[in-house]
Length: 294
Image (cartoon, rainbow, N blue to C red; front, side):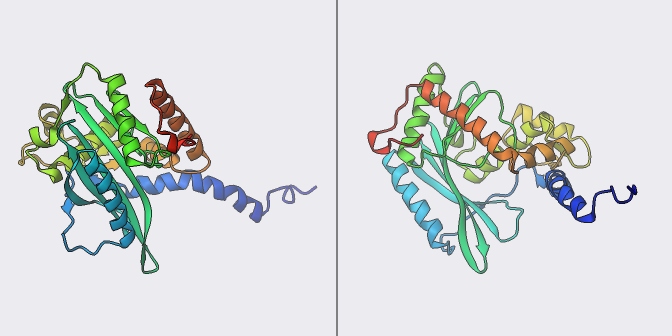
């Protein structure tokens, strides 16, 4: 047999190459395009902003539930979004009696001239006096960045009822933070400035991702900024040159593979199984009307 005849055909090479391009090319795209700045600008949504009906309805439902639970609406904000024709909004709530915050988030996209809801979720957050934190959400999508070891962050996408989700959050608090004091960071550290509170939280997430090798500063080290974040990780002096971040080579692959088939289902299964077990350890049970959530 001629050696040329034994070589793979062009069609075979393409079929073999497409999966490799998918698995190894998309992370390289993230590596080339991912950029974000420290303390990103958070814009409040104007009262007369014409939000899509599906978005307004979602926010109305969550607002009703959280109001019954003692939360107050602290404002609605646009988040920075890198993708054209996609918008991310969050409504921030605060239960001052419990020193617990909540976020209702939606992502919607313009598809052929119509805005369609892409994702929506609710998340509760309690920070404690030792800088530990408990987060409880019902989002389906896994986060791109690693979670600090002092944070207990769980996702329960099957608990879509907001009041049930808050009950789960309270159960986790009772089980894991019985001797810790909740801290109202929005009022005590940000004097009610919600936009600064959100922006600083995003930057703290970027800084942690940087320490874990997911991100790096563009243009080299920003030692002054790093020191300021350690001394006062909320509002560093304005004279500091705020850095921008970009993905590292390893970080681009780790972020991408969490969201790509065939790895995504395995990451999601492992995360949700672990989170379900943590909640079950508290003895938490859903009301009988929601039996079948597992």
